[in-house]
Length: 132
Image 1: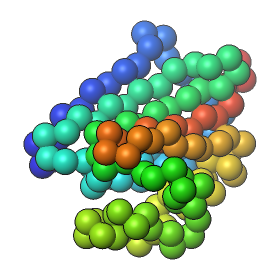
Image 2 (image 1 turned 90 degrees about the horizontal axis):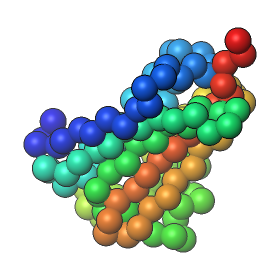
Image 3 (image 1 turned 45 degrees about the vertical axis):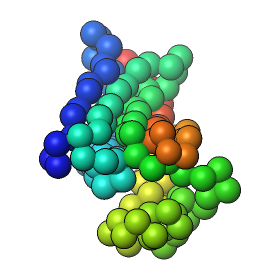
């Protein structure tokens, strides 16, 4: 994968969310593909999950170009592409994060990003913990 390294940060106990497995897989794929697309070769992509009270939180972090603060709210909109991504020639339709947000919201969850320009981005989503 272009010399990318993956780090996995998972708890010892299994995590079960109240969610559609195919939709979760689709969201996860979008976030990992973006992390790879916007990370430099040799960069590390970290995938993690944890229980946060009554939610399961999944996080995909990269060491890429980061997202300017002014753009962080807009990146989940349909057809929106960050100016830095367009300028750097990163391919994309501007639909991935929009689709991810729609899927997560439909499953009763939320999605967000934490990012520092030049240091990378961390995309997280959380879903309700599965009922016993």
